[in-house]
Every structure is written in structure tokens, then in C-alpha cells.
Image (cartoon, rainbow, N blue to C red; front, side):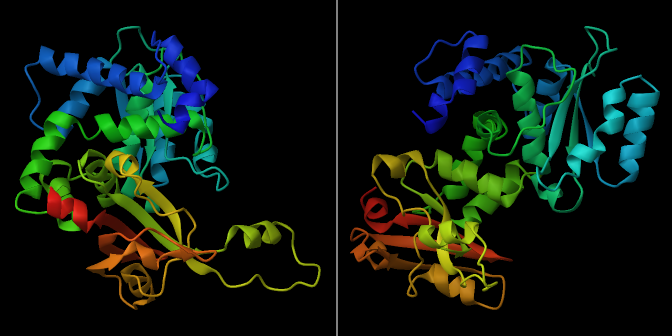
Length: 349
């Protein structure tokens, strides 16, 4: 089970779909996969992910409208608000430009569409600026909403990014967007002759089968499906919990906040790592001797890899267990992303 299984919204959604399961997230994922599998079987299979997306959206009576420039908002208003009297589209832009609640996509059911119309549902995808990198994943996120929605959505719902429903839609998108019959053969081919998951393997999977997906989304899909333990980690400047609490209350004397330290701000172990109880506590300080620290200190954006031991990670006088690991890291503008894998498991596999 996952923490999402206990969220009331997730339990209610599962029940609305006829899923009576003690682990509703898994039940909902199975429900979505089974719907797609049935459509694929009906057409005798699909050749690639774009053909699959076209098949799925056609079955769901769903089309995409992408926003790539400000002019596209005018086009959306002209086509849907003025032309089709779907006035919700005229006011949509302000929601997408709310900096306090970053919005990448929204799904709308058209009020004036026929019941059998192939464009009965419209998903608006913001592809401007940095949002373009999430285009592939956002499209499948909105497909996930449509796959799991029984009730009408005459007005789009703009939830916070960490809302349980939004997190579940991300989970679904990560599974069905990287559809197993397409993904698994590409991962097997890319992994041939390699002892562990690597960034080059991820890039090979992305370029061969999911060219429109981001590297990070493909990396998540690879770690999730890798049978051996893998930890995905992001390191950035941050404060320990005590300092974070102090920073909530501004200093009476206008003192600047203390400088942050390089910490593991995001840690996601895959299922094999959870089973092996292999993890790095979130927000733990990155040791000076780690490749991750050296990469963060480097002037250039680059990749690196090496072998080290988790026992150099220390907090409050306690070290992590003695475990030799292979680390591959990539420096990006404000942080380092890395995958961490145990050497001993790989040598014995």
C-alpha cells in the first residue's frame, strides 16, 4: 500500500469506479490499464506511443489544445467561446498564469457537444516556457483524469499540485503513458549487457520509444520498472527542519537567513529498494565526499558516476548502514539529480 491509499478522495474515487479494494491506488491503476488493454486488443495492437495516445483519446472522445504562445489563448477564445459558445474557455488563461498554483493542463467537458462527438472533452495543455518539458506527461495526466471520471466536468477543476487526486493522476500517467507492451521491450533492449540502470539506458529508452517524453519522466518510468533496488535523489540547497521552522517567523532585526546546505530534498526509492529497506532519509545533508556534492560544486552542467559507501552519510552522529553503492549524477541549474544503486545486489544478480 501507499500513503495515497488512505486518502478519502482516493477511496471515494475507487468506489465511484466500482473498485472495492483495500489498496485503491492499485485497483485504480488496474482499472485504467484494463480499459486501455481492451481497446488495444480490439485493434490488434499498437505500433508506438503516439498511435496508442490517438486510440485512447478517440475512445475517450477527447482532443488536445496546446498553448505555445499568447496568441493561442485568442485562438481558443475565438474557436470555443465565440464559435461554439463554450464560455469557460474565455476565462481559462488567468488560471494558467496564477503563479501561486502552477497549472499545466485542464480538462473540460463541452456543454454544447453531442453525446457521440469525438471532441466532447477538451484538454488544454500549456506548452509555454519551462512547461514545454512536461508536455508529454501533462497530456497523459489529462488522459488519466478522463479515464477515471464518471461525472460530468462542465467546469475544469484547478487543484494544487500536491492534492491527492493530482498525485494519483501523475501515478496513472506514469504507468499508462509508458505503456508496458511498448516500454518493456525498449528497456530490455537498452539494458542489454549492463549491470545497472544508467542515464544512457534511460536516454536510449526515451529516444527509441518515447521521444516526446522528458528525460526525467522516462527516468521515473525506468526506476519504477527496474527489478533491482534504485533510489532516485535530488540534492539542492536547503535547511534542516529546526532552521525551517525558525524561518517561518521573520527575524525582528532583519537578519538574513543562514545559508542553506546541500541536502537530499527529494528521495524516491523504487519497490525493490523499499523491499530491501534501502533509502536515504529525506533532507539529509549530502556528505562532502559524495560524488553528488562534487557535482553540485562543479562549474559546468555535466554527468558523473562512481562508487561510494552510504556509511559516509551522517546525521545527528548516526551513519547510514555500510552499503557500497554505484552513484550516477547529473548537474542541472539549481540542483543535482542522481540514481543510487547497491553494488552487492548487482554483483549477486
